[in-house]
Image (cartoon, rainbow, N blue to C red; front, side, top):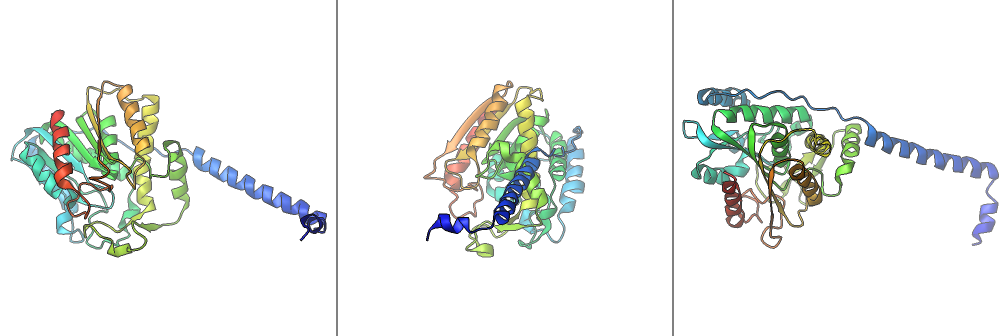
Length: 342
């Protein structure tokens, strides 16, 4: 077939308007993408932290955390407090992973308690439902995550003189946010932080946040093949909501903007970053970029440690019910790193 002859037979008007149409579509797509990248992101609302006595902290835990664990929440997924009936030298707040629940820390929390910590494990809103296919997580907002951070910090002030925060995955984003913006926190331990999904660099966060805003409610299976029959803890959700992803990465974006502008004066703190090589869910380069900014622009001491890919090839290396979790290898590393800064 002679393409040039075929092309010559196409009416000039068709060529003209066809070209205009293609150019118009390209322009519209370009403008839309630019809009998503440049549209301002609504900032979260934050308040000061009220300092409590030990008894006030116990009361606040019962009235504002435990009271939210209704009959729809799995018994193992309720917010937990391990304490010695008094304020101790050190307390650790543990924020669990995205789509998981406090049961993820069942063994590790007791090991930390044995090390002398009072331990607070709040259940992140809309997590831990007995119906693991619930659509509740799509309601999650960044403001609710900040409210959870501030409530947890307030409770922790009466539980220990030195506040440590430990977080995994989405919980690590909350821990980093709390550690940077609130001076009540002395030590920050972030494990496999999902500041952005693996495919996205940090500069695309505004685009991703605004893109999710334009999309309808959407849930994605962690494993397309096994779906609700995925291996692992039965209390963890087998799928995730894109709207809930937006809540976490909104905190990531606020942290990124503040770090790049060096907006917050940092008192003497210690920061631990724990990652695993070839994490299938997390962009480790983004984590290193943000944490390096943090340590360079402040007096914060940074300790960075990477788990062996051979011994720990998965994102959730904490939950003892994850088939490939090697807790006999990971837990001693975590306890040793945390004890180094306490």
